[in-house]
Length: 50
Ligand SMILES: [Zn+2]
Image (tube, rainbow, N blue to C red; front, side, top):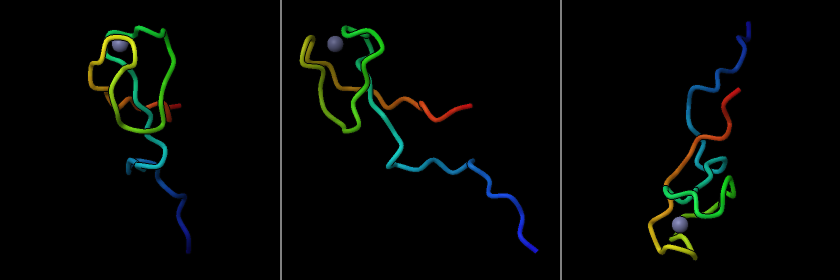
């Protein structure tokens, strides 16, 4: 008996990163790093929410 898969576990492959200052608006990166505009560390954001 299979139950529906729950998506409560955060999958790192689906994580996206975004400048905390949103220099580039809603632009996101799929890797960690720093913002090319303000050089701040990109923050992980959960874009997989429905
Ligand atoms: Zn920035």
